[in-house]
Image (cartoon, rainbow, N blue to C red; front, side, top):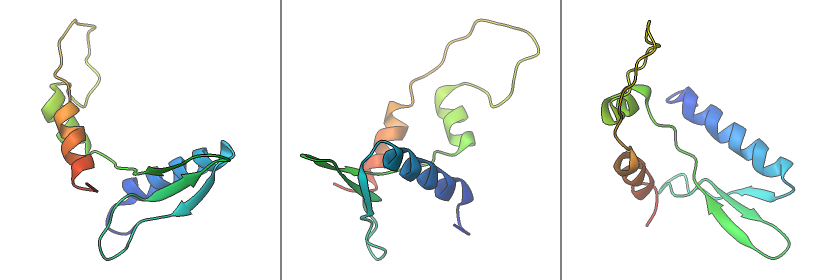
Length: 94
């Protein structure tokens, strides 16, 4: 948590959300290798969950959406951040 407060908060929120949906949630991440953060189990299924927090500057740069509220309402375009998301997810597990 000391290294990245926002990521720790995101994991806590998602953990709570998963538990509130009646899933059994267990820590799955291997501290020495990383990987998905949680394994969730329901009555008949289990699945892995990885929580990642993207940095605001990175999203703004890749999407073209500035991290500020414009003074005037204007139409604009933006870029998809699919590659940014894929890269982040790929670095977590195969």
